[in-house]
Image 1 (spheres, rainbow, N blue to C red):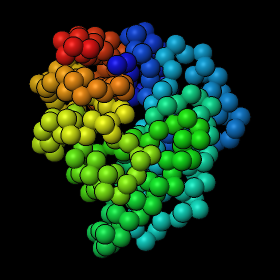
Image 2 (cartoon, rainbow, N blue to C red):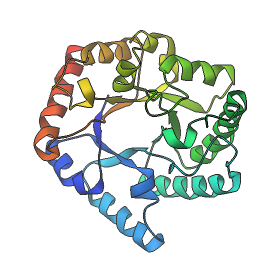
Image 3 (cartoon, rainbow, N blue to C red):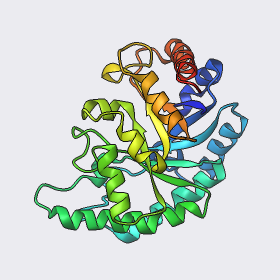
Image 4 (tube, one colour):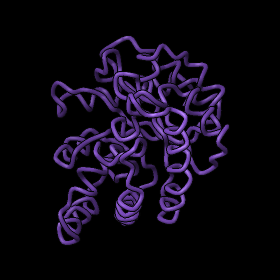
Length: 259
């Protein structure tokens, strides 16, 4: 298992100095934030020269590009997805995290069954576009403070299976699991769908600063045959000074868990 970190382009030098295996960037800002192809070419050149490569991407959709509700614009969604995955493919991305809590949240006055059908539709047509560029979609369960659907690993796995969505995969984030009081044995039940993970510590602090059961998190991933990677996704007080010790802590924790 390789260890990376969710960062901005500005944080790449510090992440390189810390010795991360890879970086996880944002789609909305880093990939689609470039105004035109010329601006994106500059981003591509910067990443080509970096020692840590962008294997994963998060923040897939802007909040106003809705996946559910009465304002879904399928044509706009497809145009965005095709452009995003084409660029991610050029950058060598492997995983795109579908968190996007605002974009997927069910409006209060909208029928939930209809919303779930919309999510199913989105998760049928979108992954093949990603796969054409070598990218796998990982749905990220989010705590209820961030979205009102897909709030646990078990719920999300059940949706993938019940709706028979073979190209949609799953992410486990220990922060969201702890916030939702989801036991880590959910990993045992859903490991076959897991392709990516996120790590933080208590209160979404940097790994090594709290009391989350990260060793048990890693142990359950290992014994269940997990073959993906793990990105730190947390709140930093001082990224350049904290990221190195946090990566070192996770590496030692992974070793203790048998990796």
